[in-house]
Amino acid sequence: MADFQIERHPLLERIPHGFFGSAGGAQQFGFGGPGDPADVRALRAAAADTIRPGGRLAAPHQVHSPDVVVVAEAWDDAAQGRPVADAVVTATPGIVLGIVTADCGPILLADAEAGVIGAAHAGWRGAADGVLENTIAAMEALGARRAQIAAAIGPTIAQPSYEVDAPFRARFDAAAERFFGPAPPRDGTARWHFDLPGYIAARLLAAGLSKIADTGRDTFFDVARYHSHRRSAQAGEANYGRQISMIALP
Amino acid sequence: MPSETYLFEVMASNTRLADPGAINAAREGLKAVLGTALAGELGALHARASATALDDSAGRGARKVKTIALGLIAAADPARAATLAAAQFDAADNMTDRQGALMVLCGLDHPAREERLAAFYARYKDNPLVVDKWFTLQALSLHPDVIAQVRKLAQHPDFTMKNPNRVRSLHMAFAGNPKGFHAATGEGYQMVADVILALDPINPQTAARFVPALGRWRRIEPGRATLMKAELERIMAAGGLSRDTFEQVSRSLEG
Image 1 (cartoon, chains in turn cyan, red):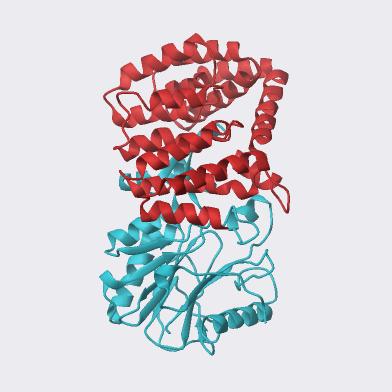
Image 2: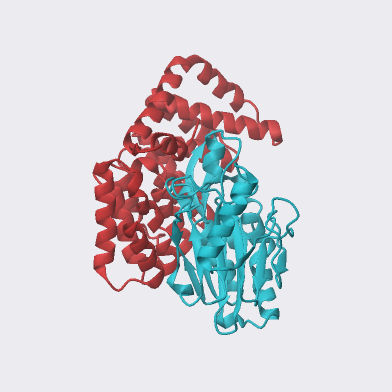
């Protein structure tokens, strides 16, 4: 079996979960990334089995939407035909929720007492459009209580690595000003560093969560451990790998 | 021109480590070469762009061109750039031109720098957003004394650790200034660590956001990496940290 590089967060200690790394770029977990889909499928299944032996993976086809799927039964984990969404929630034991990312934030959520879990994919667009709030609401509909939900933000592009320009900044309102740190101007235009994990944490806090943690891992920077869309794009690579984050009920 | 973050990535590939000092020197050196080789063309371009005052896309483009031209001239011939920038500042009828000129002046050791900074402050001192910019321009500057200047600005009557916008405009801008932050002496790292320690009891969320900048030591050449790690260890040793800051610092150290 593959030798996985897994990071866990103490905030979710009662819940089987893990943020998988790339193992030096050797492991790629997305059907959208390079490699044979059959290999990707096998790797994802092995990873799910590591999180919960015998568990079945439910990982959606992600499109940077605010949409959530409530999972009662896992689906065939194939390149085509998976439900289109950017978050999954469940109260069913035996299901392993999965989200793939490469700079965007993977967020794993759990109300351990109620036995309800969630996994969300939040880049700036998904976060701004409400994917986190929708995930929390879907968990509540399954019996979770907002005050009890713990959320851990996995490896994502960190502020010093995320240079943005004025058109990017213009997409946010004045209240989001605090997530933009001034960066050196370039090519005659102003630049900022955008704090995506900070923005995600603030959205979770505003949604009424109080148990929020950030693993503090920078996907762009930590080459040995993570895939990064931005890093691949800057290097002129045609495609980029994804890491996966998973959570399951005990 | 590619950002220093990008050059850092290129340099620190595979097992190689990045040298932020060498990157900055090479990038500024290239600007100086371009500024020297194209001295006549850049001067003419700046003059031509200065004659375009339309407030449409052509006018906005012209203002951008002026700033780029001034930046290259400054790298090659600081005295000439200071004269041009001061003239641009004095003739400006808009914020972009004033700011562009001031940005270039901030990096130069020239009397026009202090005069125009004072003039800009006097003009906008009642507008907090513009005062934030005034702090930021200085914190991001290429001036050799940027660390001492930021230290002095932290004592300015308009600066307070209690205003997160102001903290970002000065200290976070400085943490994003590759030249100042990565000064070979380690003074930049020390200043950011001091900010984290001072800010943590007041605003732990904002304090924690400064940690990733120091947390990048692993892919930096050994001299700077040691200094960065030592600052993270100093923060840990101080004790009494907020949960946010403690977690970020301990993860940055543990690997």
